[in-house]
Amino acid sequence: MVIVVGTGAGGGILAYELARNDVPVTILEKGPYINSGDAFKYYDKYSDEVDLLTTTCIGGASIVSMSNMVRALDEEFLEYGIDLTDAYEYVEELVGVHQLDDSHIGKGTRAFLDAGHELGLNTMKMPKAIREEDCIQCGKCAFGCPVNAKWSGKDFVDLAVEAGAELICDAEVVRVISKDSKATGVEYIKDDKKQSVYSDTVILAAGAIGSTLILRSSGIEDAGRELFFDPFVSVGGYIKDINFNTEVQMAGLVIGKNFVLSPHFSSFIRANIPDDSVEDKDILSIMVKTADECRGFVCDDGDVVKINTINDIRYLAEGVATAGFILEKAGVDPNTIGSTVYRGAHPGGTAPIGKIVDSNQETSIEGLYVSDASVLPISPGKPPILTILALSKRLADYILNK
Ligand SMILES: Cc1cc2nc3c(=O)[nH]c(=O)nc-3n(C[C@H](O)[C@H](O)[C@H](O)COP(=O)(O)OP(=O)(O)OC[C@H]3O[C@@H](n4cnc5c(N)ncnc54)[C@H](O)[C@@H]3O)c2cc1C
Image (cartoon, rainbow, N blue to C red; front, top):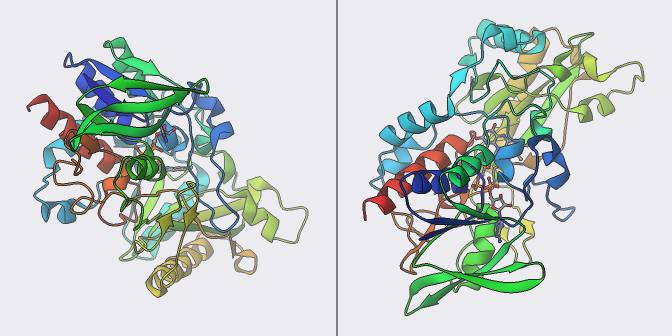
């Protein structure tokens, strides 16, 4: 039997791959089982110092994701003897990665793509795992899809349960039980009662913060000392009747040397413009995302401290300037262009490969593995889900062949 902790990007596929190969699986999820459209109610809270976006519910943060799917860190993984080529091909087909049909590319996204091309930038449609036939183009991906048109970890959990896995929700894993440095099970809290389930194979996929806390309380104290979170801001301004707020979000992509840009609506931009007649439909904005240095850490109470280095700020500034050029070229009034605050939505690096886990994602406790954003050795500065899926598929194969 295998215990999988967490049902997000890393946990869902592991449970599914193992269960469909007749391995008995018990899945423990801290949050509730919900409809995708209700996911916005399950965002976590951190201190006022840091604006980090994560969720606690079935599907984890993947349920509020935009389903952007790009390969990342291929070269870096080779240094650890990890070749993800086959795993990437497998998961891309499994979740249906593709660029959206033009019927799902709205006016604002088209303006972004055209401006990017005209400026000679590396511009393309974003690869996604969204089913156009179901998508109603409401612009609400980050709230949780109201019509289940995009892939999330929840899809794999449902398939895993169909294949025989046991799912226990509202169950917070607090520590891994071990004997002589070998995993023997986990302790979790459900209905205010401490309970245990036993297995010699435990996979933590509780996300960068959740897995850190479990590792620490299981004796792996060094977890969570090198956090990154791929910082981002959205930069935008006024362009009358662009109606970008109801388009599929982040359907375009510009890849720069030190940043990525993607069209992304933020209502905070409207709040920056002192003209009350400006409405959400009159805003075009671009998300600027960068790779940051691993200089944050997770506190023992689950809060997060983030330190910005000079390179973090420099890369963000380069991206913001480029976004400004695109917006102006796309027809946005340059006098209205402003930015949101600095945020993060891709926490990772808290149990990095090569330090806390080895190349098979196993910790110093035999039989205890980690397979989520924690194991990424550096910040990808790009959407990490596809990489987490590929790593988890590779780990599932390793466990099946052991
Ligand atoms: C708004 C938003 C949009 C995003 N869009 C994209 C995108 O388009 N593409 C992309 O690649 N990335 C995107 N991301 C980032 C992506 O969602 C995350 O990087 C990814 O989901 C991380 O996967 P994970 O497995 O590490 O953690 P998660 O997916 O967060 O899963 C962790 C799971 O563990 C559970 N858990 C936590 N603690 C415990 C515990 N103690 N016991 C049991 N269960 C526990 C949580 O409830 C959760 O279900 C987005 C993030 C946000 C917030």
